[in-house]
Length: 101
Ligand code: FES
Image (cartoon, rainbow, N blue to C red; front, side, top):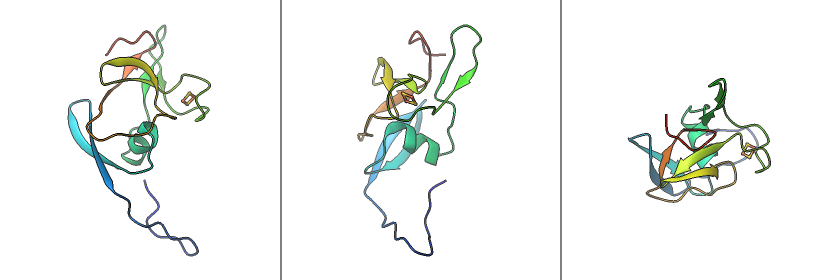
């Protein structure tokens, strides 16, 4: 889901950043947030609502809504739309209370 070629702009390849998403070894790139790396990998469901278990993903993308909260390195409720991706991170989906599904 990344733009590789564009008629006007150049998108040079950036440094790969390996991380783990729900037990799978995957790769993002330098400059990604956690959520942008996951979207580029086709992962659009980042958490689930607590009452109705509805999928949640990007909403505001500026750290204001908590729709993108995920468990990061065992820490719940990390707003992944504004958290830079770091090599070796362990990312998991959660419910709104920080419980892994
Ligand atoms: S999408 Fe709203 S806080 Fe991340």
